[in-house]
Length: 200
Image (cartoon, rainbow, N blue to C red; front, side, top):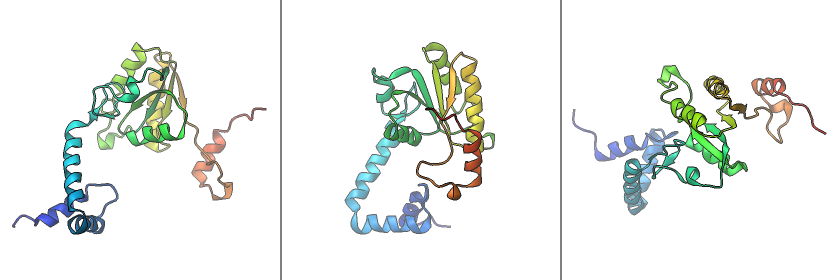
């Protein structure tokens, strides 16, 4: 069988992106070839450079071109708090939506033995070293409220408590502006179980 045509290879290569099926990849390929050849060349060059030069920060594991990322190098951030997130996208969301000024740690996943993701792959040894070596008072666990995310949060909580660090968990439940009748049962049950006292 002969090798696929170059256009077919391009379409298949574009399908590596999340949420991109065959038709979308085909549309992208046709658009690049019909109207954006210069942009396509620039995209190819930047992709190649990014794949070669972007690695992980040695402290927080966020994406970085440098050994230590800008967030870890910033002296004005609070060393007493570390917020653990599942992905660099989660870190970006926290930075955009909150006034959090502490440090971060990026897992690049969540505990999932079926996917081959255990404590070693998620960098728990590096996090434990940071908790041992630094004056961290609080570990903020910001994993997603999935089965795997909750298991990861439980493991992280134990890791923190063993080192005398207070673990905390992001609140989950009814979204701000949401109406109870439109909230799914699981979210409502979780919110009800995690209710807090109303301060005066």
